Image (tube, rainbow, N blue to C red; front, top):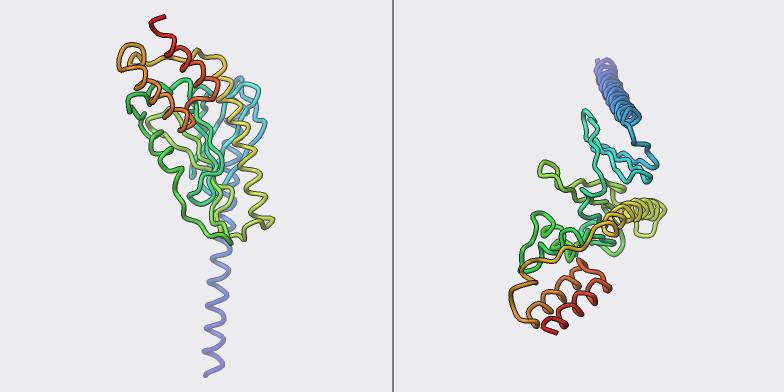
Length: 244
């Protein structure tokens, strides 16, 4: 009797393991099929040719460095959405909650910061840069965060590491290197738009406040990374030259 009970228990466990294995296989097949659909949508997109792509369990993202576009799709359906470089606000690489690299499209929206006018979620992203919550010995997440000019999808997070890994291990180094590469490519897109777009000057800088106040605002923008050193110097010279 005990032998029969034991065999029934073993048979039940084996049946459960087989069922879970079949479910995982089915889920993997569905996921791969959805990614193949995303790939087909990109191939059908006129003017888009993927030069790099990455997928995790929740989102797939690709970029075309030639046309300065990115494409992304989210689980479970992976319907492709295409974003031009001019719609990219910032790109940041995080290890856990610590910012490793950050590029912001300063010229286009820099004026929004003057006079304490923070533009939407951009302020939240910049505010998060000071966060510190990590172990010195391991890394739990390596995330590429892309901020978009899109009210329905303002932030796109792409995970390159989702499980704890020893710091400086091959897993950590690979994830960090890949995230930084993506960040560099998207930074190039953002800067291409910066270089092609005149730097708008806020009306508040033109007509209000003393020169000292305007210089203080400029210094704040520079500290935040919204203005480059060259832009800061050019605006400072312009302000000091007022009235001459």
